[in-house]
Image (cartoon, rainbow over all chains, first blue to last red; front, side, top):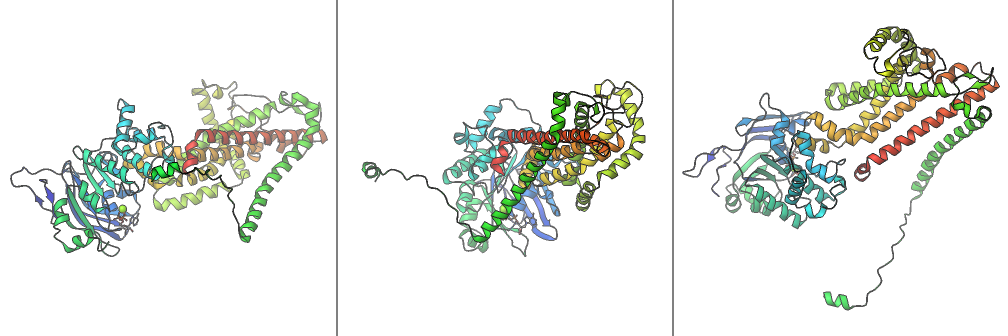
Length: 276
Length: 328
Ligand SMILES: Nc1ncnc2c1ncn2[C@@H]1O[C@H](COP(=O)(O)OP(=O)(O)OP(=O)(O)O)[C@@H](O)[C@H]1O
Ligand SMILES: [Mg+2]
């Protein structure tokens, strides 16, 4: 675990003799509001290249909102506003002249609730990102197979790729959505509780994929499953907040340290299941 | 455990059971009421069809197949009459109206749903519904007195510059009182209803699905084209059919504007043409006995045409959107 990570103070802690690494994605002093209701306050978090960052925290503390701030989905909600910066490879994605669509193409997202395209077949769903972003790529068949395999869905659907994507079970739909977001080869992949609707074996397949992808893609995953966070992530950030207090990062560090020797008693309580 | 199961005598697996519902009294009353309402629609439709058929029978019997081939309308005098020309005119005007109205309606609906600022949203929605309620007579008068004179230039320009498209070519440089003007006025009349229904349908698209398209790096237009419009397709076809139904049956505006003649022409910019509904409105008051039967026969043809258009549209929608049934 020799990766540079951000502590809750926001300063980079490098291993003694390594050159400082520019984070792929970095949130700087991010705040978020829905109308007058502040959801997030002063969030600093840096995601180093090709690491898996887990975000944990009680329901309603703003984890999904944070992910949506990262790829500019937050602004689609009427009345939503934000503060701070989000840097992708050092460039502010909210900067002037930056198109949201190109940011979202680089920062893919798997939503908390599965949302396949009901009017498209399974195959079309996987390829939909290419069509939407106008990307040309040879060998669509190979890509479909590869993405569906990585999402752990290929064996179940390989004989019915022409069937509508909406006709799958909830867990299958979620894996289809994962395959869909892999097809455009994002630099960063945001996953909002991707396994909450999955059975243990699909979950294992997705976790393998996350580990596998972790060598090429920077991944941020929200999860309520502490074991999952411990298994797959390099860095864990613990968010805390509720209806009255905007969400902040209580503690952030290498996953092994955060789970074995948390600095903040609230982190320990949460991990032990004493609240949240 | 497994082997014990395998060795045990195999009991036949149980038969499938019938499923019963035991409704409450309230449920039963409600069910009766709504069933009655549904049937009454069918009964009215049946009564109209029967009435039309009975009243049209003498005329249809006299005219025989000439009813569909003759280009004249003189049932009380020479006794020669047929709907060939007015039927063609009806279809021409209605299609013209639909072609003009559909893009405008779709654009308006998309603007209101996807682009309009929140303040405008309510106002525009209300305005569209208000427009839909304006009587067609008003549209007709406005078309006759204002639009027609002002469209002469447009018609001439179309004829001069786009005349190579057959329907815009003209034999005589006389414009006005044409099917083109009628089509335009009818288009304006059906824009509100198509817009209103389309907007409603598109606003039902799940936000999460649209967000998925944007999150994949799609532009707003890409999302609309690849996700929203396919989602709303059957609803848009339905809205168009509603509009087409209105256009086919539109009477007053056409009766006011068009100078009837009984020829089939594709030259929509020239004066002349006709429509079944316009014909009935124009001729019914002065018609004799034979004339009335003939007009009812024309009405029956319009009735059948509308039913056919709607049925075909339903079939098209069902064929083309199998996935909708699963998801919605
Ligand atoms: N579209 C919205 N409009 C207004 N408030 C919202 C909206 N979406 C979320 N919120 C509020 O923002 C807060 C944070 O929500 P968020 O979805 O980010 O929580 P979360 O940490 O992802 O929770 P969970 O673990 O249950 O998914 C909640 O209090 C919620 O009520
Ligand atoms: Mg959430």
